[in-house]
Length: 353
Image (tube, rainbow, N blue to C red; front, side, top):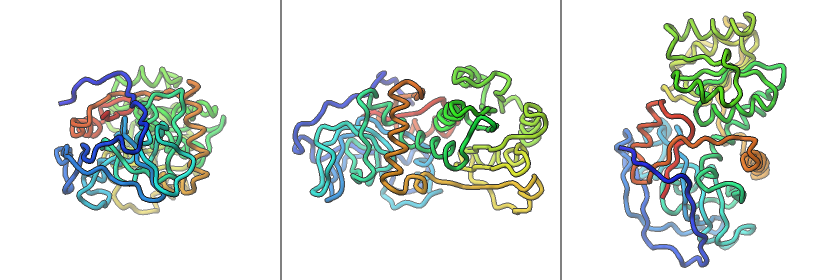
C-alpha cells in the first residue's frame, strides 16, 4: 500500500568521497515477475570506474520501461536493480572524470547500476547538471520522459503550426510533456485520456476542451476514436499519432491518421503490438510507422546535453510544467509499479530515498 510522501526531495551535499556507507538499501529483482518481485535489500555501495560517478540518489523516476525489464519483456541480467533515471548529489568521482565535483547536484536518464537505490553509478558522459532552479525530485522526474517528449515532437516528427497531433495518455508523464511541447510549437493537439477525471488536467495544459477525447466513454475504441479525430479535422485525420499504449490502441491509431500520416509507436503500456500485415499501412492511406527509442536520439553526449539543456531550462523557467503525481518511499516500489501499471495515475511517480 502506498504511503504519503513529502512535497519535495532534497539531499544535503557531501563534502568528502568517504562520507558514504559500505552497505546501502536498494530494490533488487532476482527473477522476472510482477510488482511483488521488487524486494528491498541491503547491498554493497558500488565503486566508480575510471569514467563513472557515484551519486547519492535523492529521487528516482518510475517509468514503464522499468516494468518491462522487471517482468522480462525487455531482457536484462538478474539479479537486477531497476530504474533508469534519477537525481542526487555527486559522492565520488572516477579517476578520469572531469567537469563534475563532489557535492554537485546532478540528474540522469540512464544509470549503470540502477536508480532504485540509495547510491548509483552513472557514466560521466551521461550525467547532467541539475539546474539550481529545480528541486531534485523534479530533476529526477524529467530526464527520461522529458527527453522522450523532446525527440518525439522535435525529431521523430517535427511539429509545427500546420500539424494536428493525436497524443495518447495526455495527462501522463510523456503525454503531458509532449502535449505542452506540441502546443508550444503551434500544433493542434487532440488529446486522448483514460478517464473523465483527467480531462481537467489536460485542459489545464492548454488543450481545447473540444479536442479532449475520453477513451473510457467510447463504446468501441477502434471505431469511435478515429471517428472522433476525423470529426474534429474535417474528415482528414491527424498528421501524426504518438502512441505509448500499444496493443489496445494500435488499430485506432492507424485509422485516425490522414493519408501519408505517421504512427509513432513508442511504448506498450497495454501490451506489445502483435505482428501485423504491412498492407494495413497501405490500406489506411500509405501510412508510415516507426518504433523509436530514446537511446537512438541521445546517442552522442552532445545530442544528449543539447536536449537536456533545452528541457531543464524550460522547466526551470516555468515554460514546461512537470507534474509529479505521487511521491513514494523506496520501500514501496512495488506499490509504485502497481499504480503505474493500473494506468490510473496522473503525472510522474517518483521514489524518494
